[in-house]
Image (cartoon, rainbow, N blue to C red; front, side, top):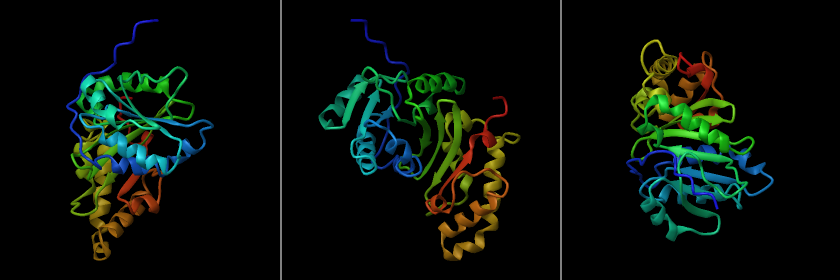
Length: 266
């Protein structure tokens, strides 16, 4: 038997909380649910780098089972102690194992979705492409890597969707209550973009334009922050290639084509 490959990556801080990743889960179980439904065999979804507590993997399992009852969720962690903490929670369709960006699964298995949240945030920006490439090699046909970041309790989140061909979109998701301006999400941009939120970079221009639309939509606040965000997104759609519509905007969620916000030197 060949020696087991050493996990690729480094141990993260591992902080997490219940419901921290609910916004991304809602997106996977919503606009991306077709990826799970079209699989001819039970789809495999990976929670990569789930952290010190396995709760986010358990929540992902519960939510995706409502979309595809035979889905298999695999929590993968580079820290053996974190894997051990998940083992008592294993059940039919939910398992935990040691690994990293090489995404170790059983022979022949390829994941339909790999969710990696608050993992690459702790890496250098120039390490991101190699990590993406490793996961891309493992994806099932039509599969997706979701590389994202959020705050400690999931009020502000953003993620890049990466398929076998490369990044395809950026999504921001915001809790409407108490929101001062959409660009508050800037400190939670994925590693590939967080250092690019400076004048001259597309993602900075996008967030600045969204802030201006949000300010101009202030009169809509009489009907609530949701209506204000809808109005702002409707205006922004005239200038930016948004990939979703009002049904997602009502949730404080907005997805833009990656080509419009990608770093200039890529």
